[in-house]
Image 1 (tube, rainbow, N blue to C red):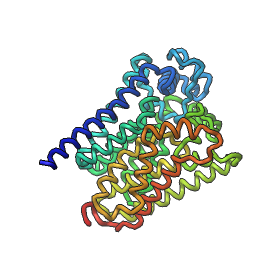
Image 2: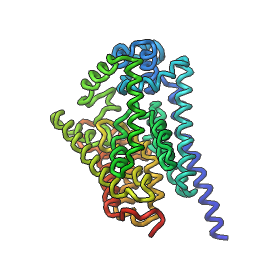
Image 3: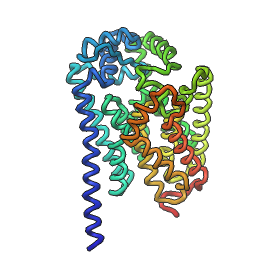
Image 4: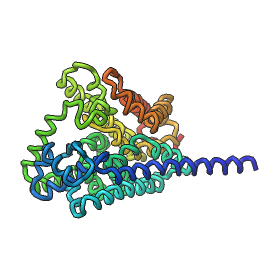
Length: 414
């Protein structure tokens, strides 16, 4: 009787937490719709798509040009301009937005992000066999996290990237490599996010999935040249060169030195040469690539190869990226759920992984995230970026755990 009462209380509290959590994306979605011009980044995508579809793709990378279109289409922007920094293949993916008027397109966009999150939740629970408790713990945190809040408030497609990775992992398991590659099309917006995934696949001799993925993204790039011209790439690289070493890419609250990356930390060190920052970032990326290649090779015959790929490659993607905003951490969803599944086997868990995960979760919980992102890190005197060090501890604990694990022991074996 006592245990049943405890179970009922637990279920009620769990339900209340989920309801509170669901209020966050609901409220931030309302902010996105009500204050699209003043707050969100959606004008960045819609104006770029408008320029590209009207034959002026290179202008999408010129601040004054895209700003003029944004001010014409979105009331309330004032003098604000949201720069477009994604490569021309991204223009192919967002061009369909121009089928709708700007006001309608904003609803379509937020609807896409909400449905992507819902579908991802369904797929992860069903095909990763999340228990009810695992599902509740993960989504209570995710719904009350800074990355999800920022993603919906700004209208960034991070939820779409996370769904894309989830679908790719699912189809790779089914050995439907072409479908997996097609699901990764959204990464034409941020192709560097697939570098570590490619390393792990190559190490594990999964050449066909890696090849199909490369072919699909190459076709997308060729199509963008055909439709938008070589000048769009020239304009993109000129814009990239201007902004890559800038600490203030858009506004102070969105600058690169807030990133949970090595480069984000290095940018906080006063008077450090930009060339040293870039060279260090590239070397660190190569080290992460090598580690993931080695781990892919180690776990080549492991029945949980894809879960291990998610756990190793996705967090490494975040910390090694030359640019990665906090909302991009939503792509960690399949990695964390895979970690839940792997943790059922004690060989994948060490003494530091649990505290590392809890520290990262606590730091990105909405109240602490808002403080560190909008107060702590906006002080010029603060050299330390706590997001980077939490992510470093998290990545280090994962690598340590996987180095210690046996190569071919499947999940469930103790």
